[in-house]
Length: 152
Image (cartoon, rainbow, N blue to C red; front, side):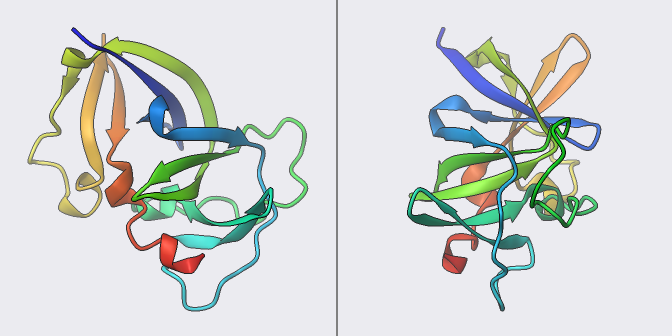
């Protein structure tokens, strides 16, 4: 049995996760430069130590209400974060409402997402983890950020 580590984060009231092996770092909200004609879910570009990366509005990409529009100068109590991760061979930033924990679980605990899920947002799910009634949705990062790298 292989152990899996997931970074669990919140979007609205829902909990999502990404494999920790794909996460480079977690940042406080960043200053963004808008990019004309980029994908609708790409909030803009940001500079991370000389590397220009696209910033994905994760909520908007999943069909939820978009994240707060202003990311500059966040309040100290703001829990919003940017998760910088590797997907499709590129570094990308994901906007999330809060990073909650690093969760260790057995790989066999992951369940395939059901076919009854809406095809528009359900296609971004890789698996579902049921922790005694607490559902954590594991994202398919490559599908989620598809089309974002062209903005950078």
